[in-house]
Image (cartoon, rainbow, N blue to C red):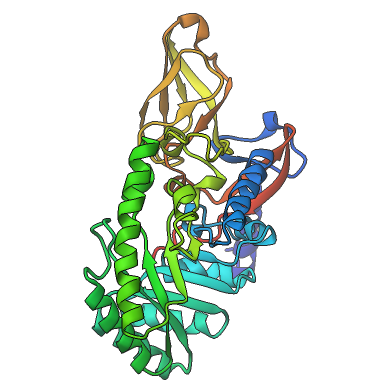
Amino acid sequence: MEGVTQLAQRQNAVDQAMAIAPAAQIGDALADIDTPSLLLDLDAFEDNLRAMQALAERHGVGLRPHAKAHRCPDISLRQLALGAQGICCQKVSEAVPFVAAGLRNIHISNEVVGPAKLTLLAQLAHQADITVCADHPANVEALSDAMLKHKASLGVLVEVDVGQKRCGVQTPEETVALAQRIQALPNLQFMGIQAYHGGLQHKHGLAQRQQSCEKAVKLVRKHLEALQQAGIKCPVVTGGGTGSAAFDVASDVFTEIQAGTYAFMDTDYGSLDWGESLAFRHSLFLLGTVMSTPTPERAVIDVGLKSTSAESGTPAAVGLEGVRCIAVNDEHSILQADDPAHRPALGDRIRLIPSHCDPTFNLHDTVIGVRGGYVEAIWPVSARGLSR
């Protein structure tokens, strides 16, 4: 009989023989990348970063890009190198890889409730400047108790509901009362308010989006006036996003904006009327291979729901005249050609623009940065699956 050592050696040999090669390596040509893979056009990506940073700086507003859009510390580090003042994370666990990568200014743009999460929050606060949202006195007291227990300190922003109808206090009086409670509790510091309206980011018409932003700003001003009348300084007003950025920076209300998707541009944001105020390019793509051509009009590729989300619609095929993605299944996407002459052939490589970048990133271990047809960078999506 084989001994334990011999069994372990044999298993190790099997594991090595069956090791799955990475989808790409630095220097590979685009044609050599295995599929499905998530690609980032580095030229377009960098242009997008510069465009948003320049917009914020022209108006004297800070840019705090939202990392939930990508969950990749390498991307955040490049945003900070261009002048971003910090980042947002949506969940406490999501922030861990970013702190590990050296990011030290992180806003958790969400409420944090529960002992395990509060303990992790305190641990992060020992290593970085962390702020968090709150909209209930009991949550504020729990934050203070956790910080005291773990000898940490924390900045807290009152979240204000400006029309999203999700989290947030409902009245200026609530904002004042909660700010006063934060100021009264040990190991907490009142930092300001968060006023984010995700729904208006996706209003298609430019004028409609502007009107919605102006309505939200009016609500924010009421809360700021109430704080001022109560003698409470409000150094930070954070919120906004990619779709509302042009209006947010010009509002004289926001001190920073939380745009995230601008770096990548999915089909949902790409369909908006942008006017002449901003111009972002599609930089994020899914690379797939045609694995079946069962009819003259139909091609099936190896990109499915385990590689892209579809709650915002199907992804869009790039560079294929009259070819539409009509369905996304678990392991397949179906392309339909209006003219059989334009149907992709078996083995063809297809690029798709995802319909929603945030959950699509969360389905991939890495994003492959390409420039000039070759792989220049491979970045881990380190916060993938960290949603606690």
